[in-house]
Length: 324
Image (cartoon, rainbow, N blue to C red; front, side, top):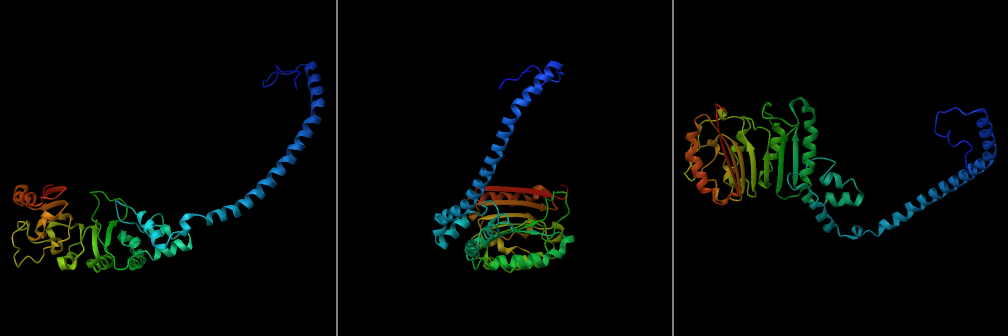
């Protein structure tokens, strides 16, 4: 359909009197057909909406039945549990979060929840965020959650991480562990496979670690801990590796002598390291040496460790003095 005034369309030019007459005549001729087409479109749209509604309703039924044919529905619970375990984080322990691990899987459906609750491997890894002191009211709930989580792990070896809340920098004040939470973790020492404690262990808490012996941690393969300050302890340098410890060495961390230990990461006074560490068994070793003496005074021990850690694939030794 050709316009009588094509040069005026999509412009701001005013029409002349003759053009006005032509425009009125054009609209009078085309308006009935436009109204008919508009009504027809409305009818078709209504029909389309009705068809779409029926299609969507049938789609729910059809898709529901298609879902019944999903192969995963026919998997044995044991195999499904193994698949669940493969979804866990591989570079850290599993967070107590609805966004990952067993807490996420349990939200899918009732059957998945049942499988997750009866798969102890899903609960044998836990990443615990330690509340700050001003949020101590959340500690009872956290302890209940951790207790429930670990109870579901059965008797499996445990991989545990305790980490501070937020993202503290090296300039932040030390973030200590709640005593109740620490006692809960220590009570499970016989099941430790990997233990990482990122918050500072306070000087009045270290005695709990001193009481642990290698026999108390028969499954320990990796440990990563840091102590509060070298000023909390007697002595500045440890006995050389391989030299028998003296009876007075009550402050030594004997759990480091576990024969199963393959990874050791320690920050603190090296006077805490016992002489019976099996350096040759370590695959990864990272020591941050805090000493009140000079760096040179630590060199003999560094040399001994380098000599004995013959199978270490990663070895990091850092000596810090009081002047650093």
